Each structure stands twice: as structure tokens, then as C-alpha cells.
Amino acid sequence: MSYLVLARKYRPGTFSEVVGQEHVTRTLKNAIRSDRLGHAFLFSGLRGVGKTSVARILAKTLNCEGDNAQDEPCGTCTSCTEVDEGRSLNVVEMDAASHTGVNDIRELRESVMYAPGEGKYKVYIIDEVHMLSKSAFNALLKTLEEPPPRVIFILATTEPHKVPVTIQSRCQRYDFRRIPSATIAQHLMNICRSEDVEISMDGLKKIAVAAEGSLRDSQSLLDQVLSFAGEKVNDEDVSVVLGTLDRGMLMNILEAALNGRSGDALRSLSEMIENGSDPLRIAMDLIELLRALLLLAEMEEAGPVLDLPEGEMELLQRMAAGKDPQLMRIRFALLARGEERMRRSPQPRFHLELAIVHLARAEEVVSPGSGTAKKADFDSPEQERRSEPGSTAPVEQTTAGETEKETVADSPASPAFAAIETPEETWEQLVEFIGDRVPSIGSILEHLVCVKIAGDELVIGGKKGEWHMEFLGEREKTVELVKLVSDFFSRDMKVQLVELDTEERTGNSNLLEKKERKESDLARKIRKETMEHHAIKGAIEIFHGEVESVRVLSGKASDGMEISGKEEET
Image (cartoon, rainbow, N blue to C red):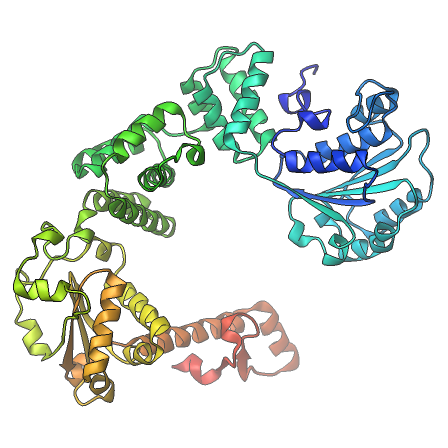
């Protein structure tokens, strides 16, 4: 095949042609001019950002035979041509992914001892160097630290954390950055002009965003688009090839949800899913749009951060105009938690629909009580007193029977986040929050149970006469508890302590009891899986023995967690 893909056809041949890595190319050019070039380099960064290309350009520059060549290769001399064509004897490229062993490095060390041929330098480019084995790295150490004269090593990797510190300390490290989407889009536009391709800048921005900072990926995607659409490409062609969702439908869902029209949003969502769109992908794209709205509401100039097509940017700016940033933050959190639950559920569509409804009802979080009244409407003396700076709501001690007498109509509506976090999860997070702030109160709450969380009311229960209840009943502790609870929910909260009889308390486990039960279940599961393992069965059969205990040696459970046979029987 004679066709050369765009990523190879437009591969940079000089430092000035490298896109988005000026901090690397400028440093290398200055080092070449001042004759302060190191003997070993480590190029690290995302795939497709120019690591290997810069390594080849550096090798060409050092061996360039051009008369006027100083810090750039001429590209026309014999040496430059041989490097470009991959047949230079002075530039050795090695793929560490397929040469991982110590023997490969030994062969490299032997070849290093030979002086360069016609060129000035012998350059060794080791790609994906993190794939070398430990013994191979050890074999490379001494040669890398003190190579023969006129020998330069360039190590390239996408995972620098896997390169031993002993290797990194012997190299000059250059971190290649993720290329901005706007820079990639402009480069792709230059390529399209050279190829006589008609495509809009919005379409190129979509490709650039999909490439996630990789120039090579963007060029490969552009190749796919051109194969699909030919020399005249419209935005719909780009969306089809990239597999992106209908942005118009996503905007309809978002606009309807922001204006409280949950029914319209659900209808648009249903239409997208029936047309074959993945609910999880819809959720992820909606989160991306909500992020854009959040930044537009919080920042004066969010355009450079977002890198969105002009049409989408104008529409989102209109949506964000006049919107409450607090509500935007809440909506983002609601949808993000919904997307998290979708990943764990066999019915992701149901959780997405619920999250869309929450977006349309997000004001309920800002509006305490019934969810319809605004904060400014609370003008009763009690409410005014509770809203004064430094004032706190009292902790009321009642019995469980008195709590049950309250009618459903009298209790305020649950905040919107209560449908995302179950009451049990909310209670766990509340106790953790208080434990971080005031450990003494947090440890007490672990022994008590949550009877009710609804609206601006929290009911905590414990046995009658239990000292934990008496501890929280002290005036200083009650005031501090109410303040902590109000800080957690970001609203004034009413806290009640109720006394539970033995039967009621037995039916409600506290956090410590639940933790012990989980650990016991885990112990039984681990012992069961261990006893059923074929290796254990074989050992017991061979040695005619029996398992007395099972000890976990890794993870959090390793701190003295011994599982005996008795635990299996419980």
C-alpha cells in the first residue's frame, strides 16, 4: 500500500515543527548551542505527544552534516536522510517491550563500546523503557552513568513511576505535557488545508477533545473521519465516526432539567436510549456539560478552560446566565453520584432517570422544609432566632412513642440528596464527619442508632439509661452536636434524642455492630473459599491434616485477623 497515514506523513522533522512541547525543544536547542548536552535523557509523558519524535530529531541534529546546522537538523544531508528512513548505523532504536531481558541489555552494552561510524554521536533510543526487567535495569546502570565518549542514551516511557530511581537519577528528565485541545485543533486545520479537506473548526475541536491530549491519536481519528466522509466533512460525519451522542438531544435534556421540566427531560432521555444510546455514556456526557455550566457560573472567562465548539459555548452561556452557582454545584454532585451508582447497578437506566429528576428538583436542597419555600420566607420568631449568628437549635429528648405520634404531613420533606444517599449511608457519613471534627462525640455516635433523617430533623436513639445518651444530653455536648450536624447538612438542623426499649434497640444495629457483622461475614467467606481451594484440599489429603485457622496476610484485614473454625460454624 502506498498510502502513508497522517501521523507518519506529518511527523515533525525539526524542533520547530514539534507541537505543544516548547519547554522541551527550547531547552534541548539551548543545550546543543552551548555544548552542554547531557549523556542520558528520560522522556516521559502521555502517548502520542512527541517523545520518540523529539528523540529522533535530537539524534539528527547531533549528526547533521549540513553546513549551517546548529540547533536544527537540515533534513537533507545523508545523515538526516538515513535517520528519517530508519537505516542509520549511528541511531539505534530499541523497543523495551519486546527486549525486556538482561541478555538484550548485555548486547547493547557490547555495541556501545564501538565508536560511531561517520557521524559525531552514537544515539540509543530505548522506547517504553519501563518494560525492562529488574536485572536488565541493573545491567544498564553503570553504562548509563558513565557511557563511552560520543554516546547518548534517550529513554522514553509513558509510565515514569515504573522506572527505578537509580536509573532516573542518571538521566536528565523531560516531562512531555498533554497537548491542549485548541493547539491540536489548529494543527489539524493546517493538515486539512495541506490535504485540501473541507471541515469546520467545530468538527476538528471534537476530534481534538476525543484525542485527550494526544496529537498522534487526533491524527489517527482524522484519518478515520476522512476515510468515512471523503474530502468534504460535516459535523455529523465527525459525530458518527467518534461515536459521540446527539449533542442537541443532550442539550434538550439539560435545558429541561435546569428549568424544572423533568417530564420533558425524561422523554428526551427515553428517545435517546431507544435510538441505541448507552445510558452510561449519556450520563458521562451530561456530567461534562454540567461541568461546563458550573465553570461558566463560577468563572468570568471559562472559554480557554472548556475548549468547546463555539455553538455549544454560546448555548451553555445562555443556560448559565442568571443560574445560582450553589444550585449548579448541587446538580453536578447529584448527577455524579447517580453515574457512580449506574456503574454498580444491573439497571443503570433507572438510576439515570432518577438522577434526571433530581436535577429538576435540585432547589429542594437549597430550600429547607417543604422544599418549596425559600430561605427568605422563614420569618417566624423561632426561625429568626435560629438563623441569628451564634445561635443553635436545642437537642430535644423525647421517647420513641412521642416521635411516632408525629404525622407524616407535619414532618418536612426530605432533601434531594436523601434519595441519592440512603439514610444509612448518610448516617455513616455524618458520624465520620463528626469523628474527624470532634472524635469524642463521633465515637459516642458509633454506639447509638439513627432513627430518622428527614428534612431538617435528625432523630438519634439509644437504650434508656445508657451513658452514651447521658453524655450527649449534657448542655455543652448538645450545643456542639447540633452545630456539627448543621455544618454537615449546610442548614439549621433539629436534633432529638429518643429512648428505645430493648426490642426496638435490638432491631436497630449501631455502626460498631454492623462493622463486626461485616467482618464476621467476611471471615466466613474467606474461610469457606480457602477450604474449597483445590490446593488446600490437596494438601489436606496428602498430609492427612486439618485446618485450624486462616490468617489474612494482606489488606486492611491483616491486623491480627485470624479466622478459626468456630467462626465458620457461627
